[in-house]
Image (cartoon, rainbow, N blue to C red):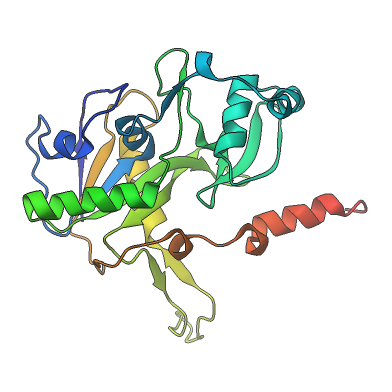
Length: 257
């Protein structure tokens, strides 16, 4: 396996992401069966998902919630607009679900945005990267996989890892049910989320500060490529079946714990 970073210019307004990748200054060519790990924020910026806070008018609900969580009312308004679900929060953070992915503050990012602005998640991440994948096939005759990555903290762990907000072009979940462990026991539930594994590789190389490396090529993977569309339900489960959401909800509901 080979990991190749692509350094690209910082952007703050809409641009053509395919052109930016395919005509990179380092003249790194995309090859068949490459998997591109792309920063979700970089894709968002390319689609104009940068919002100036001066143009946001908080609702009464956002104003009230901002007091509870000590968050800028305008950002709280965006959190309410962008979230699929809100589970609760604490000082400065609201735990939400966006595109069926757990995300603090609806994934809204101030650190990689112009002053006075924030970057939102892509509106339709699966559709966006499917179109990008098709552009590589139509214009470059290259069959690629794409992982749209973001960084995430895991429960009770320090530091960030990568998570796949969306993916396409390959089978993202490897079902291991029916195979055997080292002691010959049949695995009944195990599956491997390949998309998240690749997102973590990308996040490690991209870094979290000013590396300006929003795209990573992962080459030489032995994975199953596919032309079938990948949907959110392929990667995600409903919150009512999630072990963390269910477990913590029961704990909060139990006064004796």
